Image (tube, rainbow, N blue to C red; front, side, top):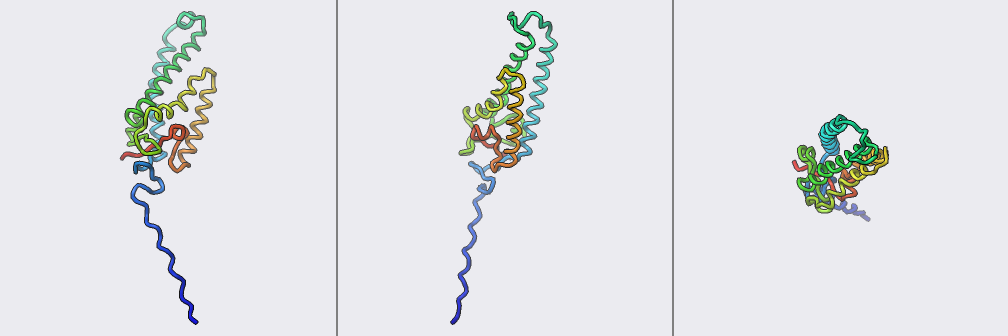
Length: 186
């Protein structure tokens, strides 16, 4: 009685087509590196800080607060700071939402060869996506309660950093909210 050897195992599956590996995204572009995203955000922040620092210095050095703000008997310091806060939110909206919709990202993202795209199909973002990306961190700045906006944004940034370095598509909290990803176009 002879025993025949077992049949050979099935062949391994073929490799995935180009652009469909572990970091494959709709549209076939590679994901932007987490480190480059952090660097781009940091440099965008430095540019905005320089602009806002100049504006704040001009407001602080602009004169007397004793007459109130715009003729109201409100505390001029608080009123000026809140108006400045609204102004910074508007600039942040233009910097993040408008530039992301019109050009695919903030100036530093674009300079480093990154682009924000829709997570479902890799297409350029629409206004809905761009506004949602900005709104999650940006809208907290409008809350007129001291410390709360900063604390909320601090938590969002920490969670986003964890997600950026641990999620397969490197999505931050605002990416998940807006259903976007950041890809490398170089």
